[in-house]
Length: 153
Image 1 (cartoon, one colour):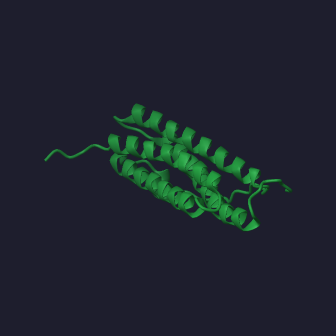
Image 2: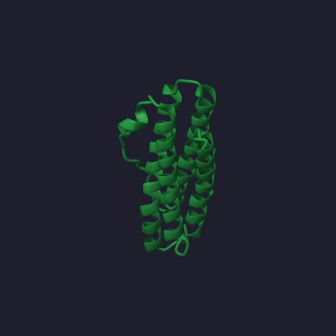
């Protein structure tokens, strides 16, 4: 779509690389969070149920920010479909599942950091958007890690 955005075409292309990857990761995280939210069982049900809802809400907010940034750059928002890893769709062992969710959140955080770093010089507004989302993801990572039962030695 035509735009009067002052960024050079190369900067937009670079930003789109990171924005598209972030969009797909955040959509994936929405699916993981809701699947976990629906399937969690056991003694930690209620706090985990609520936490997965919070993760979902943050992923939705982040997805919208990324999609809107893509549109601001004059591009068309076209997410890719993704599949969920089986270990994140089956909730049998809560501590193991929580550890897998920590890993998923950490991976999303790392990708957002790479996107922010990759766009900081050519498109600081995109970098700022990814940093904002990353802060929220890091908060959820901290919350999830804090729910994992620790072994007392």
